[in-house]
Image (cartoon, rainbow, N blue to C red; front, side, top):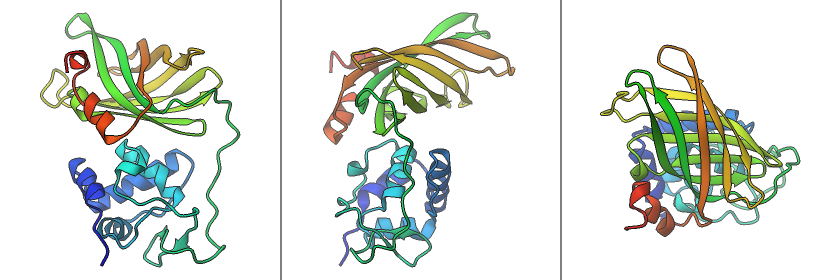
Length: 254
């Protein structure tokens, strides 16, 4: 009897997503990163029931983008040899080492990447609130996952009342991409969703990225401000993520 994937189900329900919602989010993530997939409710059900023990590579990145967690924390077993097969259930995934006729996985262009950026980083940005007439700073601990020249960063939920996500591309020392923040429903901005672009320069040490963000305000005016990411830990293990799943100013005292 297959063991249910309780970890994946817990992550999905913690995101307050139905299986349909989760499948649609996986499809959207696949299109966003240039790796389209056929995720649907039935495939999510088969993952969660344990009928499929490991996701096909094209789904790995989508799962990491949507959840903000490395694949080894989502309850799957390792993919043996990367062999895949059609599961005949409205999606393609790994079931057994059957044939060489599997759909090829799209590959990224050769990347100019100086090193690994995966791990936990402290994200800090500044913004001016026109309604309150003063400047504020936002801080989150984020988990950065890397696939070639692509980086995805998702905030740890306990590190801030808002949630933050970044999708970035690395080219040498230039890191550029987009950001989205869902503000605190009980805060000043009442759960408003903001998004924009970000451009950073990575220091040669690979331990800090600094630059600026640009985005729209609530009156559709264009705003900008400084943003930096400071490296904290290369590990993305559950123990490490638990350690940083607190407010940034409490890390030293934790």
